[in-house]
Structures are given as structure tokens and as C-alpha cells.
Length: 301
Image (cartoon, rainbow, N blue to C red; front, side, top):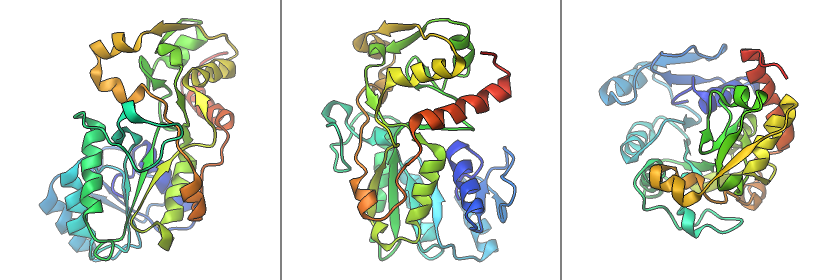
């Protein structure tokens, strides 16, 4: 696992260990590691010489390398160079921000079209292209494109101006109004982090997933407004929402454009390929997430 101590990577590590896998992680050592990790290699992947030397010292071939911190084409080229003889599979965690939001269908599929706007999604797409130009015979790879991922270990909030908002629970619990672009009238499929982990882990020994790209939607399609309503319901309060115009918000924060569209995808491809598609109902996963944050912050109803 490249990463291993963040929200998504940490969840995958925990789920892998619980499933009986032996796990090694590459970490800069700034956060505590999950109990049970077989090997924690403390090195910064951006220091390529040190990273390669660390891999050489371990003298291992991994069944799968899962890269949660590959953010651009240079990172992907590093993966190809360092792991084509050290791993049987490379799994790259991309994002649904790779798509052109103005050309999305409902449901959308993996074929594009793709964003041309510089930013996070553009860089992730550039990394995907490096792998797509790499023969699976040289390095077997699989790509996943999750949308909003939620669950214990992360902050709540999936839409500006309350995306990953550290004060969101306190604000809603206190009856304060929140402001959502377009009133939250966008469809999406948040995926529970443990479901994403199960999906990814189910691919590593699945021959049909070699050279494939998968969207990673959650079990339910909801309105973004419903996401916040459900938080309020779990806190036992009524939600008050203010409406911000899309154009008004983009004039101030054009980088938020990838959030402002429907984010709905099909599960037919991963299901046909016998992968573990998401099964946690949104209301159940959201309850677990809210309770985890409430226990940390002692937020009253």
C-alpha cells in the first residue's frame, strides 16, 4: 500500500488485514500505522532514489501494490518503473473528477469524455493515461474512479460550501443554516469506505480486472441535499439550507466545478466481472459515520 495511514488507504489496510492479507505500507511516518501491518516502510515516494533503495532492501515481490497517493503522470511513471518486476498487480485509485462535468450522462460510464480543466482531476487523468499506455503484459494494472467516499476516519460534507467541513456537525446540531450550491440539487452515489476497500481488494486476484477501469459508486443514488438532511436526522434536528447559485459560486471558486454535476454511475461492469460492488445502504453507512464523529466530539442531539 502506497499511503496506508490516510482515510481511504487506512481503511483498505484495515480491511485487508481483517481479510487475512499480509500488508506492507509505504508511509512518510507522520501518522500512526494500523495495528497488524506486516511492514511499515518509512520513506517519501517523492524521493525516488530513497524509495527505490527502500524497495531493494525489502527484496519482495508483492501480489498487489495499491497506490492511493498517485496524483500525476510522474507518480504513475514511477509506479511502472519500480513495480513492473516487483508486483503482480498495480491498483491505482483515481477519481470521478477525471470526467468533463458538462458532458456527463445519468448514469455515466467509464468512456469519458474527460476534463480539460487544469486541476486535481486533470492530473489524475494524466496518471491514468500513463498506465493505459503501459502493456498489461509488462505491468498488470487496474484503475478505480470513486466519487465521494464517506465513513469513519473522514470529515462529512460532499458539496461546497460544506465539503469535508470540520464544523458541520456542530453547525447542524445547533440549528444553524448551511449553504449549498444549487440548493444541493445534484444526484450522487457516495460510497462507504469499507465498501470501496472490498471492491478494490476483490480485484487483486481477479484476472478479468487486468487492464480495466471501473467507476466506484455507492449502493444508493441520492440528492446531495438528502446527504445533509440525513445528517440532521441522525442528530435529531431540522436542517435549514440556503441556496447559492452555481454561476455565483464558480465565479469565486472555479476549482469547485467537478463537484457541481450529477455523479451517478453504473455497477454493471464490476458486477459482471465478479467484483464486490458496494452494498452498504447510504443511511446505514451515514449513521456509522455520524456516530463515529459524535463520539470523537461529544456532540449532543
